[in-house]
Image (cartoon, rainbow, N blue to C red; front, side, top):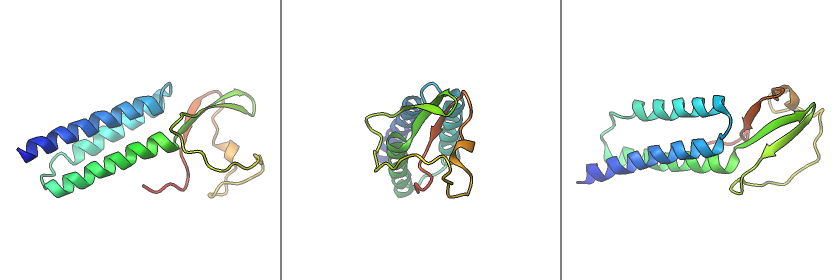
Length: 131
């Protein structure tokens, strides 16, 4: 009985992650496909796990991943050279802002605007988030 209940919880988590993926990466086919592939890969990889405690631990991780996606991922589209429209959901965590400095450098030492792909939709995740 308990394993049947865990199976239902795993399926619920799987479906929930896919719904979150559809919401967070809406309109970005590349990100939608990459997220779908990653979710499916991770669930298939752990399909053989039978330890109930380990499964519960992984279910907790899926909830943390879902929360992280919903609260930290935003989308941006370049509307004209150097100008972007952001898609920020009400769930997105808002942090203190500082004026944009086009000469600033990321942690890796590469200018932020080098990451922006002209005319495409892309998603931005906090560089320092650790799941």
